[in-house]
Length: 268
Ligand SMILES: [Zn+2]
Image (tube, rainbow, N blue to C red; front, side):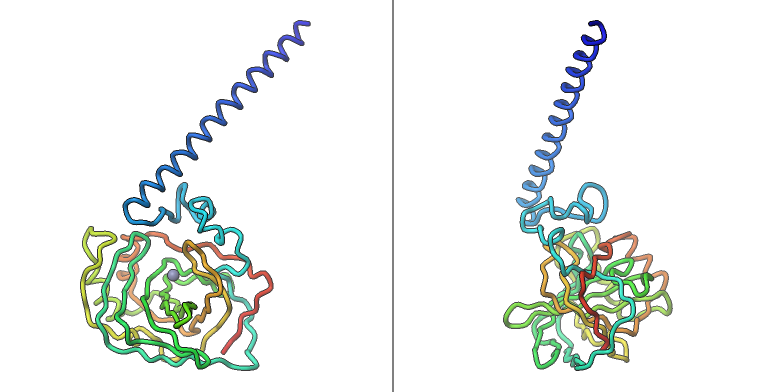
């Protein structure tokens, strides 16, 4: 009898403690949802990040339109092992011009936004250059090895399809183009566009335009798919000091490697 009472008491206590944790959980969810709404009011975008409660494993929970971050089957970045030499080799023709560019600190990375006039052509399809931005460490890895940084040139065709050219960045010689971009980074002025500069994006490209291609996604929310990914094989260099300058603003802004799910990577 005594032990029965004790068991009942412990069941009630257990049930009360479960209820307590449920309430805590509900209030946490409310805080997160309310928090994002407040954030939407500010910049029209829910907040997401690379650490803490908004880390990449939680992106799909932050907003309904981010569900592809968890449910998508063709996500980026990926680890590249043994790419297949493409039978029908694709080409990228770069037609970048010197145009006005804006250096923006958007709260997730440093982004350089371009005026219309620069484009690439992949297999007869023309994509306009919108912007390029940086990640550290690199998002794509080759044989499980990451580079110090990676730059993504984001392009869009008339139908709205995205094509990204990725270039791995290794520690080495100082990069004069990066120097001029870093000089134009706004001071303590996140999410504000500043620093008009004249820039030809071609000055960042390596000589060798051999590239790896696969179908993937944006590596940031909303993780939209059907993105044409084109990773140049030859890396570019920047100095350890230039890497440190970026890391002082964004110590880590790379999404983890995503499963291939049967996709092939072509060497072109
Ligand atoms: Zn990117």
